Image: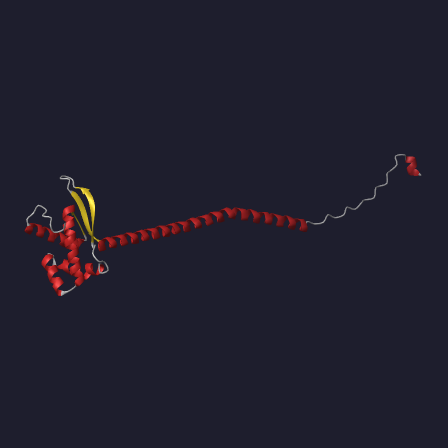
Length: 205
């Protein structure tokens, strides 16, 4: 039960240790310690957050009497208490970490729920940013690939177009040559020469 554990210390030493751990928890948002100490720190830290939610002069004086740093008291009333305004108790969470190396004491981590929610929100935002970067990178990579494909298609189509143009030019030149070729002149038939008879008698006649 909270407040009844002696933790192997005298009252003064125990309260000094717990005050320092509560201050550290409110300052950093988390503390690693043994399970029994974490349970004691949890009850005292939640009492301090309840004082912060009251936000009165008497509550501030009580917080200053327990917390060892003025900056942490200011953070408690200005930041931590407003973040937990809609939560009725349960401002902290304790997670077991396993046995400690050396003496085998059971270790735990005590966290502020508000800090835990902030960390989760930051993780989600980081994941969204990473996903956006991936999609933008893929689209940027697709654009040069598409441009390269278009260029390759153009280079492949260029020789075909040139071949078609050359074929059309050759056909045009052949048709032009056929149309411009001169007509052959008609061959005049020469009359056959009279055959001279071999007989001189015939020639005298």
